Picture (cartoon, rainbow, N blue to C red):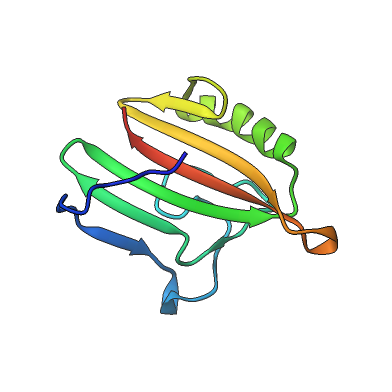
Length: 125
C-alpha cells in the first residue's frame, strides 16, 4: 500500500538525514519515528524517511534493509511493539493513541545480494 497525498495539499516536507546527509543512520530507531526501535540487523539510509506534520497528526514513511528474514522481523516487532503501547490491528498493522503503523517486509535482490527491505508507514487513524 502506498501513501498518496494530493499535490494541492500544503504540508511541510522534512527529510530525515544524518550528519552530512549521507551514509546509513546509526542503529537504534527507525528514521523519522523517534520512539520506534530499529531491529538489530537492519540499517536505514540517512534519507530513508519522509515526515509530514499536519494538524491531524504526523505521517512518516521510512525504510530499512538487511539480511534478516521477514519472519524474524515480524517476531521482533510482535514482541517489542506491545511494550511501547502498540496494539495489533491486523496483519502487519498496529495502533496506538490515534496513530496507525504499518510494517511490511519484502525480499529484494537475488543470491548473495538479496536483502529484506522493511517499510514503515505511520499515520493518524
